[in-house]
Length: 455
Image (cartoon, rainbow, N blue to C red; front, top):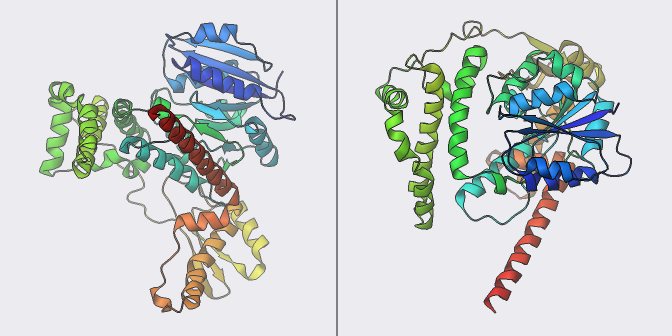
């Protein structure tokens, strides 16, 4: 019996899957024994032929499903996996040579939780607005969750590069099949947080996301439809976080604009669907024409329309959501932590109590508040020192910079989150430097190719 199972749901990506499997087969020496379980979900290309003819050293098993979606595919894979540690990996990610070992080591250090690894976009040359915005989103996401002491929210949890013990996954009931094609990871993350399961980030469990080969404008519109549907289901299942979902802006509102948007999505959407399908082509024409503002407006309208169409599938004509049970109880127990007994004592108190909010004192001096965030994990000892560092940097480093530059202290701005992360997290910063180097190499190769073609 192997210690680790890497579960990969896939759909019609045979060539990409072959590359992924070759990367897993080339893991660094000293990696614990693991198996690969590929869940071929509704594949109509040559995925099965490729898998049957592939020769790799790592044990490889396959499971075939009729196209049930990634949530059920991951659940099915977990049921037949042999390993005690499950690593979920998307089929459009190329893992690094230390990928499996980094997940394993993090669980050895901190057993009993969930580990996420980064998968920023693979460096490539992109000029169109859609591709650049997609790259920016993924890069910002992993820059943010990589900060030391980051307090994870349910929207941070992604199953594209995630590991946990099989026992924990089954105890949680796996992924909810209602969320078959979108938000299954968010919903699972919310249940983990409510159960108090710690979530950690392993920067060395790195993979590069081939999003430039798998995401398109048309695909994004389809995705927005699925997100609208899943958000409506999420608001019904977890009404305590519905105010954080985009669907909350459209439910229970009496404004004329909101009523019109709901009516269009519910009653005349089928008439407008053929017209809206032309949205990606229209956006491409607007980009070529250099009409940036009109492009952004049309894109927002198209995305919003598809989102509401998905929500209407669940809500029908009744756009009311169940009441938020926490709306009438705004009182949160705030734990007071005093530093007069030392940092270790403060950390021990946070680890024992796991408060939703804490007030930090140093004797009679108020240092700051670790505030309550809806849908985020409780505060723990691992959050404390990074939080203190950020407090100190936010307060004192801008003052020092202002004095050094001879500027009025009151005019010195706070440092950006990106600057703070660069100061606090050299590991992720190193990955970003490597990504930039690879991008420059790709750009140079492209320029050389263009020059040869012209000559």
